[in-house]
Length: 162
Image 1 (cartoon, rainbow, N blue to C red):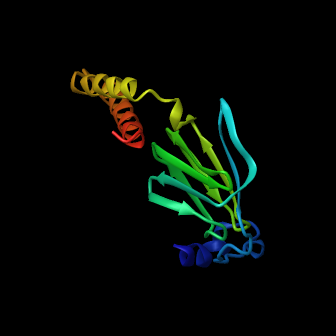
Image 2: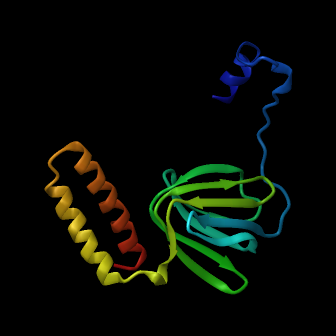
């Protein structure tokens, strides 16, 4: 795809000389600078961390310093941050992650909470209710909403170890 865009650039861009395509690896930072939050809460703001593990639509992976630049969409799941103080676990419902060449990482979650805030029994009950709603959905809209709830609650249930 990169070759196609490069070859077509003179015809696609108003100023083709201003476009330079370059593949690169991230360079030289000993730690990851993490910014992570949701609309209701900020968890990290340019904090130095050792590693971030998360789930995206492309799969689950870990982020260390010097990670290849990446832009990905978060899937509902466990997000783990390892820093000097230990391991911190969060659940994110969805969002985006941007990994930059300078080892800065921005995670913008639609909803995110520390995993220890959740009541496992309540999550299991809500999952059962969502599965029932999915089974009883009368139309495509109800089915889609119920499916999203089931996927999110199932991921949360797994993150809680159930």
